[in-house]
Image (cartoon, rainbow, N blue to C red; front, top):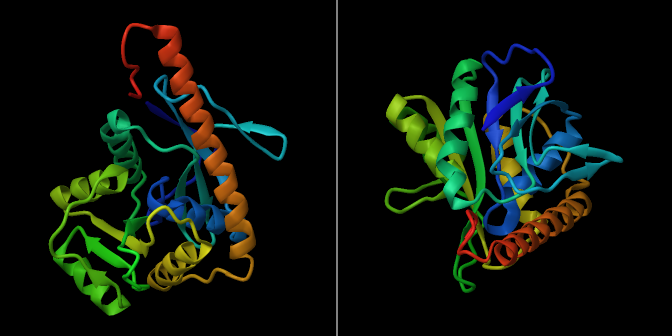
Length: 244
């Protein structure tokens, strides 16, 4: 797994924001909307022989599945993925991203995701967990609900652990969602809190329309990924594939 940069830009002091596909697709909807609204520049991507053989098409151009975008005006970098990272690749992906942040001199990591709630629970305030006690105070000040006990998984969780062990700044924002429901309001909730913490403004007026387009695109890619897995298993015939 390797990062390929298309532009040489100093990212020292920038905030790093990631939202890989997960529960409710909260992360990719929020991050993609930020990219579009802030007119962020495409500056690089991640390549790996272990990625599924899929190519995303945007504006008639083939694009890598995991990409980096930057807003020099707002001093933020985002990682956007159009496929869910298989369990077997989570550790390598999180290490690759963490090294990217550290070597780039970025100041803080923000992760955006969803946390399923029971249908009877109507909770709209995001939960959050921070890598240091100092950041936990920022969580309280921002009005987020701290998580004192629990379990987290995926790329965001591993980034958080690496940050805690190295005492670097990381805040994981998790929006309560209803199981099996994708709703743009989840992304809007995440962005409302995130933008206030970072100190930037993002126009939310088009989020509902654009988020639905993003949702459809990512669901299509996830479906194609599943088809590729199934075809690989049929062709192999010798047992489970690496994505099993």
